[in-house]
Image (tube, rainbow, N blue to C red; front, top):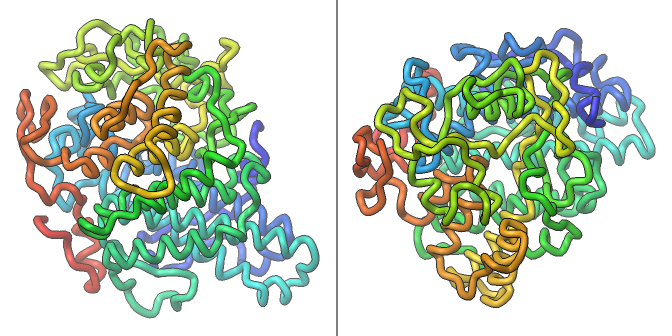
Length: 525
């Protein structure tokens, strides 16, 4: 297996979830047995990380979540759909699948199965993390005879778990606004979780990340696919860039965004020389750009979500799936709306090498026909030396998904400077964006001579498309719901139309409102 921490996943405690944030995950063995040794704690940490990459500890056909198909209960699959299909970048041909059409057309409601799945997956991950934190206190370690350097290791594990929890609360804050809230300090099973307001959750996430900033391992010193200080800095930079959305206008934190993006930039990361190699099956090797990924393995961590979903859903049988490292795959689901290729001067990729499109018909008349619209070749299960990535069946993929990478921090820096943040400069912002463009063009022929917010938004699309950023970006730029900017099939019409302003937030799932009287629905649903 190619990843150290994930070598322990299959030994991690199998658990199931009752879709309740205020429960202890049920285990086949007691906590005193599971956490009796230092290795037991590392196995439990693998379970914490594994909740990102797996639908269940029992294999790809099962799920920790009830009420949703196992194949669609994976975090990345659900998160990607929520961020991309509801934007001007992606559209899915699987109109017969529950929930797909409503994401395509921005017509979801509080009973939407995929949004409920994402909400529940994030809460489940938080539940697993809370239980790990309850079992890894200094008091528990002492009682179990764990001492010396092993204690310090567990302290690192705890900080990493808190980072993952902060990340999942950021996801819930960004998408749902006002979720239920609970930590390891709450008594289990006593009362239903209280709801937290978005501004209060922002403050909690910020405080958590700043508290663990010096408890995590130094940047680039941890095992691959485990969080370190740079991951916390990167999430803080992203949090601060969107502060006006989370806290309300006139609450910009752009100076802080510059500060933390700069911390990452100065932490010895560098751009990968070849853009495409960032998204291939051996992107875990000598990757100088990715700060924190979700790691996948096509044999040991099989999952019909993750990059298996992302690659297979973007490839059609007519595209020769074997050239994407999935000889038995190619599901023909997700491709671009015509608005995405328009941000590239040349969609062939001959100039800007980031333009990884397939096909010659960018216009979609029938969303159910995959061959209408340009397919996306960005992610692949081939390695950079043209070998098939590890796979048990020619479908499951071993390509890791970058949640945070250096290029985003360059873009955060530039946007925060243009929005008035202190501590940066326009000249440095321009230099950072030109580094991205020099990689894309192979020389300085595509370099920019000046910057504007419009240029930065378009550069974010060119650099970060298909990486689950676009919904959040459009909201921050005020272009998500109004009729001032539309895209094909926005609002369910071929030309696109405005949708209700409240759709900048997803609804709290109706099922959770029924089960938890402490929750109040988001406005408009």
